[in-house]
Image (cartoon, rainbow, N blue to C red; front, side, top):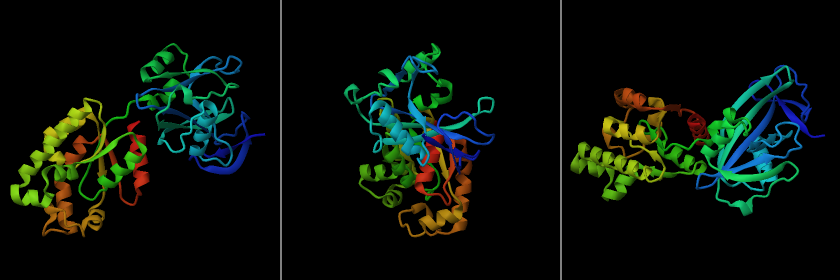
Length: 338
């Protein structure tokens, strides 16, 4: 008999197990279900049709998923389910957990968490091998076509999982120097189907000069003009289908022209940290011209206060980075954009 782990309300394993599909759960006990899609570069993904002999929702369309077995992690469970149901190996694919929701059905004895995954890899119909004992057919669809199936009541659980079908927004990471924009952008690139654009480095590469040299030779206004031109170019590329995780310069929000463009073509993520944390991260960095002669916590705090309202006004999402690792921060951002 297959077993499921029993979780508490905080989604922590209790150490107890239950028989699979034993709908006689105690109040406060939950099991874990996982579901996920595998999206191609063209934005399409596989949906499958349940066989007509299913007791529940025969002939309905759905995405891959099922119950996590005892001892499995959530990720291990979705990798297994996708492999069993449609024959795709997503173990090395980009993507991951994007959302979790909880349901309590005490009258049915069925309480559960659902982890929703989104993976990205290129594949075609020849790569799909359906589990014939569970699935009668499959087809490739886009998000609009899934919505059409849902409107005809032919797609399972659409309202609970529709976030996974959303197109990913372009991301602009903003915040004071030292909050971790570059490192977090690189981590997001590993997970999401984006390319990193480091604004300061792009300006350095295009101008052939370091930022301190640009400031010294031409002044701050000249540098801000370079930032604005770059933001305009990012929007132009976005309109042709290009998406970036943009690690913005610390002062990009100073100009409202920049922030208006950013809001038009993406989600703005504000990363924050305390002045003490910032100081520890940048104190040995010689490439911070705005701190020349003022490398101390008090001055950093003054600058942060000047820009605080500008950052907060434009931000769609705010993430604190103090005492968090890069992976945790990246996952928090992903969960907030779905």
